[in-house]
Length: 319
Picture 1 (tube, rainbow, N blue to C red):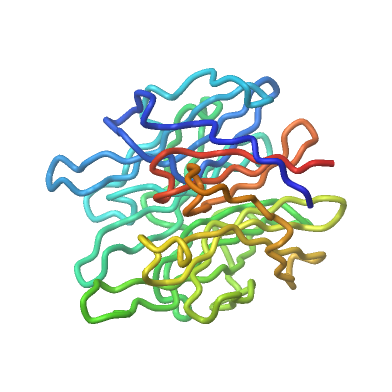
Picture 2 (picture 1 turned 90 degrees about the horizontal axis):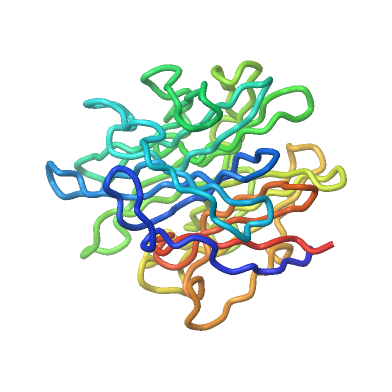
């Protein structure tokens, strides 16, 4: 694969965002229409009760060639969950999926904890107004922690293939105090589940499907999958599980794997070799990738430094 970087196409700090959000456009994910492309992302606002951050969903519409920003959502796409809900304190990421003439969203809901910072689960919502807003199918998650996946189930990406619905997602393997003077950090891996109805999912329980590259403390996040010439390609991001926030050499980079049967995956990160220019918006971090097809071409959306605080960029696969 050869990729051409098209640069940063959206900076949230330059626009008015709904829900009082002022920064971050994390995990950009697309819903492709005939005459425009809608990019959903998660942005942040301070909780008026305690000043902590809440993640809200917004979207930006672009022309099909991504040369022009058409509009930004001025309304709430989906409200956060109620008191004690799995998505009370944020939704990030927000994966939108067309299936049988319906538009669904698989959400990653966040809720705060005491001994550790957060727990997550995957919820399901449906849109009845062409993706402008979404309503929950139920108040709880469709996928969450289980016997062999004890925490942090999230980042669901769903695709119809080989006669069934496939979900790639992440699950936490542990929380750990990597040093005495820092709060606990988490490690998570990519897993796989199957469904016939999009609600009831059968996990490959506790099975890590993408091998580690930088050791057992590698954390993997945000898988997305496209098919190219009969072969399935996955983009994801990976990092060390600790000291990753301020040390670029331990922060997120984009990884790649391929499969011919959606069961066995071969890792080959050099298939998505995005260049790094010192001092640029993505020089310290490249994270939260999203592969998609638009007008016959393969694109990659992704975030840059500080986990998407300053927006997202785009790359296109060259013929």
